[in-house]
Image (cartoon, rainbow, N blue to C red; front, side, top):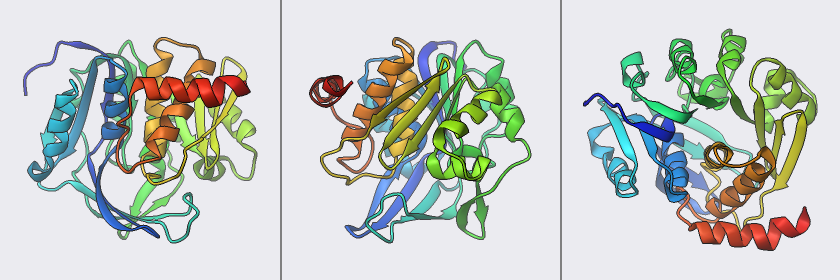
Length: 299
């Protein structure tokens, strides 16, 4: 791999995941991974984007698709890709079970040390992909460092991904500027408390801004204020990647806008993403139209 000396607006770090999605709509295979969902959003917003991932040779088509969007992809080839099976047993899109059948292995420091960007978003599929050491190395860079709690709270328990507390939590939180979690994970982290309390508790551990997604929308805590918006998809076809898209669109927008504007933007982008399987592929005009028609008039 060539030494990368370019400076990006935003970079995404995480495994590609080959997702088998099983729901009432049937079974299908989708190219996933937080880096993939995130890079699609940022590239379509017109930013200079880098993506660092691990995957098998057979799945390099995902890398090519991102390159066609103008993303610089630093792919590290592993014997196998991370393969997940996401089962949605009911019509409740927040009720799901995730199984893992293979992993592309952990990132190593040399794979991320040459990445320089105004913001870096870490989106791993489970604990062990991105270590505390790597988070600490990324935190030394002059960057806005964002991460998803799922990167650390999910563990492989005999082939099933389950959430478990982790001893390095406070050390990792102390390194982050923006942390994203969902309502279920927030409950596991802090017990039976409301989302506002959970957001404040996360903030107290280090992250300046907290993004919490839930089945109806997102809650953001930034600068001592709460911002809330609902997801307003016409229909929910692509639930998988909701949180990845949300944190990516929020962080990307924060490079040029206030927390309140970024919250609205993230809600609109995520809403449009959920209308189809796979990464966000809509236009900025469609996002702006949705904001004008459904969000600006309600705020």
